[in-house]
Image 1: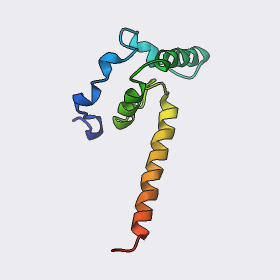
Image 2 (image 1 turned 90 degrees about the vertical axis):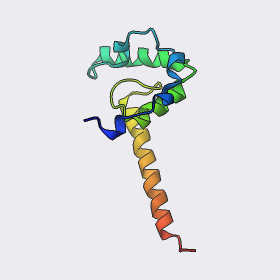
Image 3 (image 1 turned 60 degrees about the vertical axis):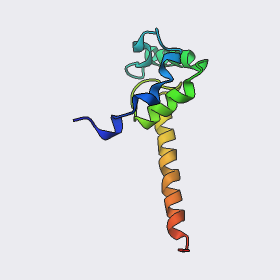
Image 4 (image 1 turned 120 degrees about the horizontal axis):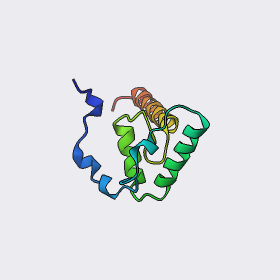
Length: 104
């Protein structure tokens, strides 16, 4: 069974053919561990992303589809987790504000 959160409309990936990483070894974007070589690999992957025209699209896709591993949109796993947490907090705060508004 496929988890709902991983189902995504292929039309949302129209940016992919324009990605700078196409043709680059995918292993570069999925380092293992936090050793010095792994950190160097993350830095190298981010350099590929740095000048990519579709970097914002890639990042948004990775956030929308909960990509928890690798470098996507120029950000590593922890950097994307920070964004997801901030977005969740913003949604909760907005819901709480809405709940406090008097009914019209």
